[in-house]
Length: 493
Ligand code: ADP
Ligand code: MG
Ligand code: ZN
Image (cartoon, rainbow, N blue to C red):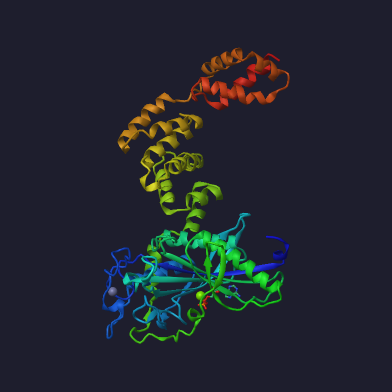
């Protein structure tokens, strides 16, 4: 951005709505799966027929507490539900049940890693439970709008951050972290594009150095990482331009138009902000006991940051390695299943396992565009490979070949049998006399390079190592190759 924007500091707070993967909806027994044929998962309760009574889903409370614990929130013992009243064609009930003054979880935090690798703490103001509305479908025909009530009553949690982010990049990293935690906990499928996560971005700008917050605007319903970043950028620019022109930013809800990358005010009708909240008369106060909270804590899957810390400590991985491997739970699970099956559980073998995983396995996942659940080599055979490299039976470079050849084997037993054969085929040659023979023949076949080396072109050392490794089909122990090359080249000086 050019200089006029540089004097402004953006301030951003995000509200993330995440659909919970409970079996049933928030207040009735309908399946929570809204992918079913339109209007098939509905009943008088979620359609809001007169006289029906909601019954709170216990699994939903547990899921919300999971997110609260994973983000270090306090959990409120007594919660009141509230009715949020508004009219919308896809909300047949005329209100949503939500939590207003007493969110279930409050005062938490997540840590995000910034571009310069420093860690920034983002406060979580609150996490509360609410129900989703239905869905209006406008693009089915030009003249009609259709409505699907399957989503009515689908459980959501809303995660509200403190205004702690200061760039679109930080907002992106925060959203990524929230999604990562939700998916790790098994309570959300992390799919922004399909709407199982939605994000509202609150943005203000102020002069750098000012401590008072500027007036915010709120961009509703962003449904991809790219749109979150682009919308925030556009809004920062719009607000700074307004102030530069001597005008004031006033509170509005905004929509983002991805086509021309601009933000604009929503129609004022939708902005009528009086939801007339009042305590939901059909539900009693929710009491969460400390025993219930402890029960959730006991079965809480290890959140990604904790797992990454543990990997650094337990397997002596670097921060980068640990973060990469724990970026998704199935990847971390697969890696741990390799190290669990190692014969030698020492730092060197852990490191070798990490290399095989990050280089070889990841390459196949990328090339074949598959995820780890359909990767067909067993963790057991990869553990054998890591053990073998770490013991020096096969060299690190031959390990690449073994890995590639292993890919041809189908099931685990075929893989383990083939591994035995490949280990023999690629067994590292460490016998000095055998290697020296190869070294000598390489030197005599490359007399020109030897001369150039001797007259000072020391970088040719790499060329000779390559030739020897090639001639040994990757089996020569590189350390011994180096020693013997130096010995044979220097001797004739
Ligand atoms: P509402 O429902 O009116 O949007 P919430 O409390 O749910 O209110 O959300 C407010 C969000 O706006 C929070 O994420 C908060 O961090 C953020 N926010 C509040 N003030 C500012 C500000 N001046 N600039 C940017 N973000 C802000
Ligand atoms: Mg809001
Ligand atoms: Zn229902």
